[in-house]
Length: 238
Image (tube, rainbow, N blue to C red; front, side):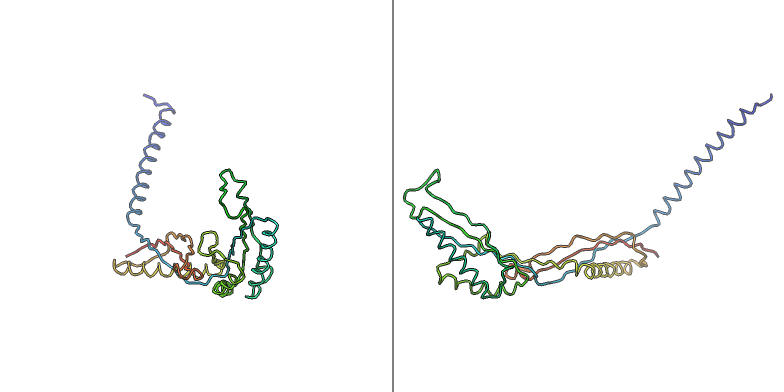
């Protein structure tokens, strides 16, 4: 029986398919073997640093009241001048001082006005200090009671008048802190490798955590704690 050329073509195709299937099994088996031999350890390194705040926002707020709106506004202008004079006496420049919101409330215009109210008009004033010298703010804060002698009661210890201390120099210390965190992670990985009778290899993967800035404690908001955690995975070998 003579075999046609098509017959041999079919046989060749079948053999090729079988060969490809066998090759696939071999490659898959080799990949599994390599994967099973691959060992690694993932560790974390922490870097912390205490820094001083370099920027401060200080809202000075006071209130006044009167039945004569014109007199009230005139008195507020005088008090504003007194507050600004106090700030300049303690080393603040014009570009560090700004007059914030000033609201005047007509109590009789309210829907639920009280006829027994002593004063019709109430004004609330905000003067804002934005400075790169936190030490000047701390000094002025300790002497703010001097304004009370001029009839100006500065509101303190409220949410709206909370002094805010900021640290803006993070970019300057980032590289050194990341390096420190990475070195500490490697120390931990070396210890693990030694305890497991292994050798530490190259870095398999690394991930820098997010930097966080917080107050060192509630009593020293002008001192900040900067923190970062780095995660590193190393190869291990026998």
